[in-house]
Amino acid sequence: MLVLLLFYALVSQALPATDPVPQHVVHNWDRNACSLVVCGPAEKGIPGRDGRDGLPGPKGDKGEQGLQGPRGILGPPGKMGPVGPAGEKGAQGGNGPKGDVGEMGPRGIRGLQGPPGSTGPSGVKGDRGPQGEKGKNGETGPAGPTGTQGRQGNTGAPGPKGNQGSVGEKGAKGDVGPKGSQGEAGVQGPGGKTGAPGPKGDKGSVGEKGTKGDSGLSEINLMKNKVSALEGQLRALQASFTKYQKVATFPGGRIVGNKVFVTSGYEGNFDDLKQRCLQAGGQLASPRNAAENAAVQQIAVLYKKSVFLGITDIQTEGRFKYQNGEAIVYSNWAPGEPNNDKGSENCVEVYTNGKWNDKSCGEKRLIVCEF
Image 1: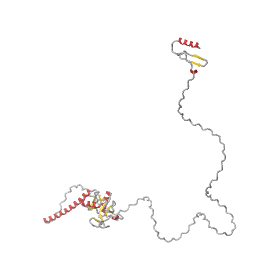
Image 2: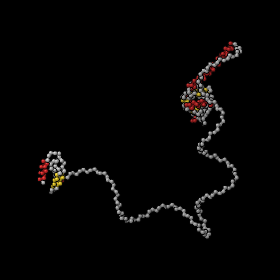
Image 3: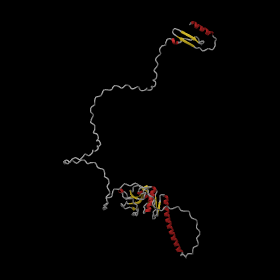
Image 4: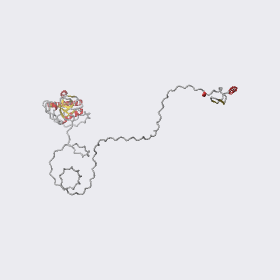
């Protein structure tokens, strides 16, 4: 063994210094013998011995327990085990409570009638048996002859009022009826604006020569009369113009004949409204016919408010008068009015439908003055 090692060392030194050639060494070590096989020049001397024949090292410390692995898939169910031995027969239980009586079963089929027996002696009269089942209605027989007509019966008491029937279908359009009579003249509308002056007319032809006039004094008197008449007409025109001015001032005004009905939209009690109309030179509206009442109604509809009239029964209950003390000559009371509710209704109001109602004078209503 030593000879081989020496020989290997000498050869290693004699080889020229060239690039190292890869070596392949196989070591086989046993406890009693060893062998060395060299397949190429050693790179760094003689290889060492395999450590497998060395003494085992000391045992290392026990490592920490690792994390628990995931739960495995449930395995298939096992085979069914053998059937166990039959158990012993148990003791007989006690009798249970008596059950409820069951429903009566269906009636059985009636049996065939037997032959008639011999007549026995009459027995004691028995008790009355239960009533049998009602038989089926028989077929309707032929109609009998018509009897004589009976006397007409007395008129019965009126029956209760029936429920209101459903609305029927819309009927066909009827024929045009005859033309009705002409209705009453409507409320006079406001005066229109003054038109533009027309073109100058042509000069008329010369008239016939008149008769000789009176003396100069008579002509002067005639002129005075004409001037007086023109002054009266002028005053009437001025009064009418004043009325039209008031209508123009109040857009809710209405003109009926020689009367003008106006409102400012103010609301107050009877005394307040009466005083305001007097201060304006008029009085509370006191319609004396249907046309004037319609004018007041139109103002009430325009403002959607009831109107106090210049009519009361303050002096004598139930006797309604105008503000000058005269009895009223026209009225348009609502059904059931006047009723002097709670004994305190002495003034008169006009609804938007034109109907009258007695009302407490302390309530507030729309002002309408007449001029």
